[in-house]
Length: 245
Image 1: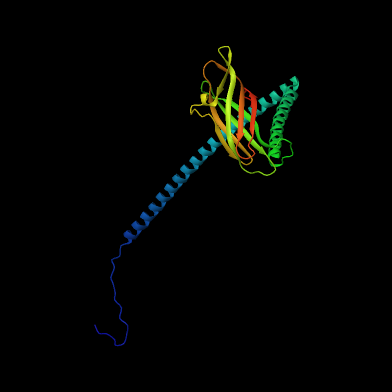
Image 2: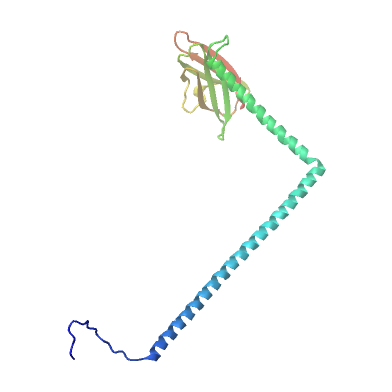
């Protein structure tokens, strides 16, 4: 075949004519679309059904809670009505008010005691100045014949320098029908006869007392001695009781 000089050349492809092949491809596409639509519909129905079941369960749960709440309200209303008829509301209110007043009175008394204590230590305007045996608290333990004690020493002075010295403790009581005195060395496991102290304002001395069998304590004798140029010797007795000195 002759070619014309200067013209653009194209390649030609011969394709067999198959009309049934195109129709088959189209049918397969339609079948795939229908199947996809059916699957999507079934999935949506399943999800919708699950959601509906969950909503129904939640609704039933809320309904049960509302029923229980209604029953509780009815019961409380009946109780209030009964209390009103019996005049018990006023009695209960009075009891609660009385208990609150007692608690507040105890707190006020405790605060007043603490204020008095700190005023005496920090702002001494009393005649008796110097070392003081302020308070003794005794507490029973779970162990047989064993007790805890807490001794409070204070210093009431115009100028608070350190004061130091020692404390001796003795119990006065009855044993075998006769009076007996037991010293600290006989009442503690460490056989300690004297407890040292050193402070400027106040100091708590804590320890334990182990009483022998058959001994009935009545009083606690505290002897405090301060050292130095103006040393003091103080004695004070406390009744044997668990409410303090």
